[in-house]
Length: 207
Image 1 (cartoon, rainbow, N blue to C red):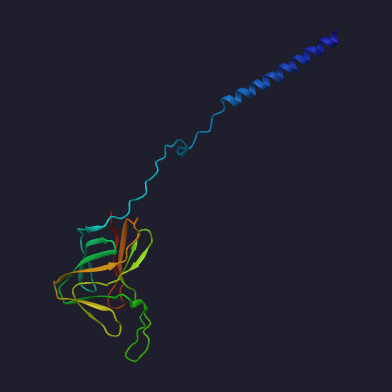
Image 2: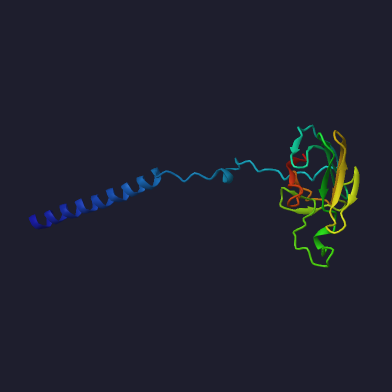
């Protein structure tokens, strides 16, 4: 009887230990911290609305001029007009204390094969007026600069805009339509080595 009683006590302790272990596991599972849903799962994150398409119309700017020293002119941005068929960008150019000329490459210059008076090909990079919108699109001018007194240079086929000292003119250039969700454009007038450095106007806001 003594052996049987001892065995019963042992079995009781084993059973009680198993029950306690099961209870401990249940308590741990219930009290374990729950994983919090992400803000987007709770609907708390703000979802940015898509931009509205670019509005048509004229944008006027009041800007400080910058000086293109080699040519002795001051240039300031005047306006950008967004039309159904494209953009027009306009600048005011004022000559300094001497007669001068601003040069640019007219449309189609990139594909021209230029030759000098001896019939030799002139190997130069002739870039044209262009804009780049903030979505990455690049667009060449369809008109070149319009305005002022212009004349061409025969062999090199770039154009000169002649200015008397102190004279001011407004020059505009048209471009194809940009991405309708663009917010700004950058304009560039490439230069020509030895004659005129490139000049540009960065991040012109359209909205």
